[in-house]
Length: 149
Image 1 (spheres, one colour):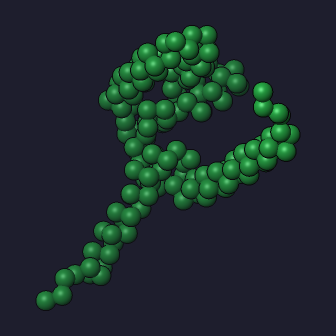
Image 2 (cartoon, helix red, strand yellow):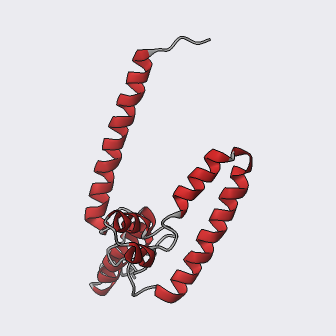
Image 3 (spheres, one colour):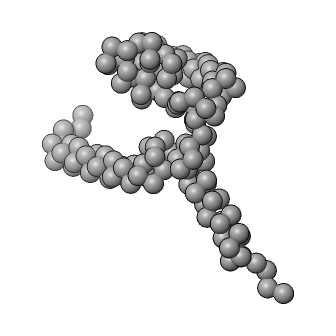
């Protein structure tokens, strides 16, 4: 049997804490530029399949179940998936594949009904791609990128 190394445990916990602080700082700066912490929505502007889950969970914690379902109808699913996997590890791949199929199906329905006007499925005007596109278009209008004759 391996001996328990208290120093190694402390180093791991410390490293994880530093890592979480770094991730928080990066996401904080990213959200200042893009208006969101969602990497997909912040980069390309289109909501991801899980857009709204965090806000839905916060709504549930505040007692607003109807609001939670409006933000994301599958906000409860990650918890159920976690419990199912803990109870029956034998079928975890099947559980995950089923969950992914359900998430994609709900995403497609939400995108066809709610995109691009209803929150959280709105297009992000502050996305990196949109900002770069705006700067590029302004540069073309100003004649900065004209080809030399």
